[in-house]
Length: 325
Image (cartoon, rainbow, N blue to C red; front, side):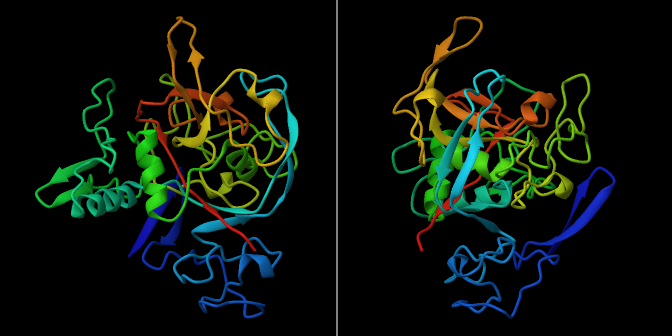
């Protein structure tokens, strides 16, 4: 099945059945390629566009996951609210999904859970998808059917939203992965050159990302995952600015960046945030802006404390694969 993905006036073709992007040509010059897909094991190549994050599964290629090599980068920003101080930290090897999790993928997961007796919930009773969110103008993008769940027509390849933190965590676990830490997410978006946006330092526009305000928005809703190839990060990761913001593993605590570990920080053990109205809540972190946030939220160091027990029409996620040589 070939799906056309649109980015303003641009379009490109993505093959979702083979999960292989035609622009990536496998090389025959590989050191180790156990699954025979033409891409070498990540530890045997220095080319991130060719590195295979799981050399036992031919469906996992650089088109679906990208290897982020071990090394230091500058996290945070000294001037941005909640994002300082800027510090140099080390993050070890990991792989990250190139695309945000889609409605089709999440509906498939919900059906898998249903088959083992869990209707829109996990084994602990945590709800997976918020069908009852009536606080906004956006309709659900997953629907219930007589046989289970499916994406609403035309929204299958859009990023899933209205997913709680526990639902995102459980999806990643079912795929042998985890949510990214803040440090992993930011390195994937930023690279090592201290850029402000995934694509560089050029101010955002509607060819690079899906963003805006209620008064002036690029689209006013989500777009299919991968619709903005010109806005990719240095590692080829898509939609790390705009479209939807993304759950990460970490809790939020004031001052944590100053106190965090210098190597592979995983966030504080608990989280709390008090907003401008004095309302306080247990807080996890979402990274990036979404389809209805202004350009400041597109910056790679932007952080949003989110209620740990909440969901949103502008909040989705992607997963990380933990790897060892």
